Amino acid sequence: MLLFDKKQIRPLRRSQLLQATAQTKPHAADPDNYPDLPLLAITSKIIPNPTSVNNENYQSYKKPLSALTAFISMVHADAEPPLLSGTYWTLTSVRETKHKCSTVKANSSIELARINFPYAPVSAKDTDGIIEILYSCGTECSITYLILPDNKTSGPYSLVDTVDYKKGTLLSISRRELKIFKFPPAVKGAIKSVKADIPKDATLPSRVVETKLNYHIYSIIFRDKDNHERHIDIEQ
Image (tube, rainbow, N blue to C red):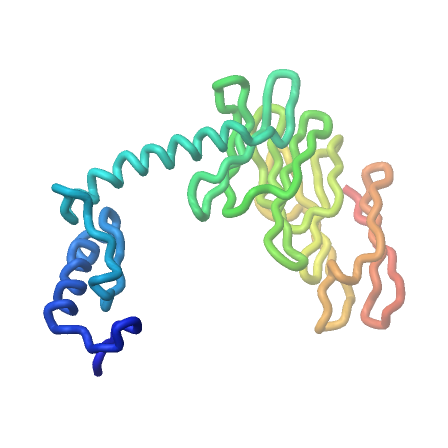
């Protein structure tokens, strides 16, 4: 197969092809430090290196560039407004890597609590000293973490609907069940679970009509498999 320079409409000479291919060798040997070049780049389109600079010198350019990028990221991270602020603390969220976002509660320069998640939080609120941090993970999918007054963390909890801050419990709605979790102290697994009679092809979050917390009793209204409204009370 012949390769053509579109402007001159002529085949590339073998020496041109070999020269373009040779420039990809540093990238193949060390792709983290050397930029990529198209395998079949036309030599007339390649920007020449500066005087007295060869391909091996790219590494010396990458290090200060990485330091500058890190500094810029740090400046932007510091500039991010806090999610929440208390009398002696702030809650901020900083993306550390592509798949890691850290939400940190700190008092001045002292870290008090940290939660790592792939995404940044959607919202955060403080109720009676309990910080509730909400993350979205898709349709009918959310994750909640709690930072307690003693700075211990609790979670993750899926699709949290209602929280009883006085009793230290929360209502989580799974695909087909209503679940009550205890905090603090965090108890592994639900302390109560109630299955809902809904259609097989339906999910409970889409069938819930209303939820309330009355005198520490969780009250839930949902549509059953016959599409009738049903009422369930879950005592703690």
